[in-house]
Image (tube, rainbow, N blue to C red; front, top):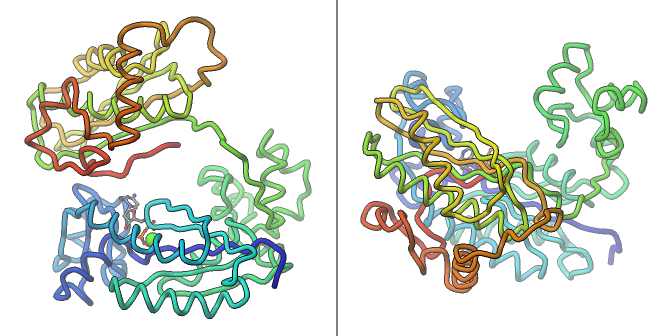
Length: 395
Ligand code: DCP
Ligand code: CA
């Protein structure tokens, strides 16, 4: 049996639209778009027309007027990944899911003896039981596995042999290397440096000039190594959602804002982080946006305290125009341990901590408080909470 790490990476092809095509066979072979306002994902048939995630649906329909547009249904999508997660746990106890991506550590398991055979069986099982195709890649680390999968999509299967990581990496485009980012990749491209091989030729001093303190990490990645930074602190925690119908009803917008704050603040509390800045973002039916940012004088991760500031910010930026999207960002996060003083001492903080404890056992929507009550009749709920129309983001 091989002794080195073996990671299996699995990604569902055209996730949202594939699930819709599996649920409604009449959609098979047709250009399908899932999204609200903008394309969240499109089927491979729609991608042939140049349609891609993030594109306004209006533009997509100009490119392909016969495309079928669906709003999507998050709980159904979740049940598909849960089922695949279950299959993966039969192979290894170490399985992590990120929306439609699964990392499964097969190191030392019986599956590691014949990964390709195991993957073929798994792919067939998923196709038969769930009606969707997945791409599977194996490598000695997550980065290589993920990059390898992106090259063989859809319905792909690939294994990057141990010892071939550096060679595999040298052919990759810089913009595909995690940590380099769109902006730096564009600058380097303008200098005629497009691939990992080309950048490595320039040596570490050049990396230092471009990437500063991140240069050692980038250098390792360019060599095909993927040093995992344990528990890296996120820069911000965001929650945002588009509305099923645009509205000018301030009470409704405030309720949604309150709920988004509840969700973001709960994540900040569970990560032991305190935001120093809060940002409120609005998107209007006519495609325009406005946002407002403010630093806290005293820091807080208490829902009601954040909301009382956010509400004033909302009033400042609200235009007399129908709202399509509401978002909140908690930024400049600092660990609670680095902050002096009694942040958790008052009655409100006692309340949120009690709520956190109940919700972590019974789900977010087991208790509905504050302005979220106003959403009860309006939004669908699962045990996790009201269903946001956009996946939550932590950056
Ligand atoms: N998604 C979204 N908004 C985005 C990008 C993605 O809501 N801006 C959702 C819809 C996708 C799902 O996340 O179906 C998974 O994202 P992927 O990037 O894996 O894209 P797909 O699975 O749709 O396509 P691919 O076949 O390229 O993996
Ligand atoms: Ca996918």
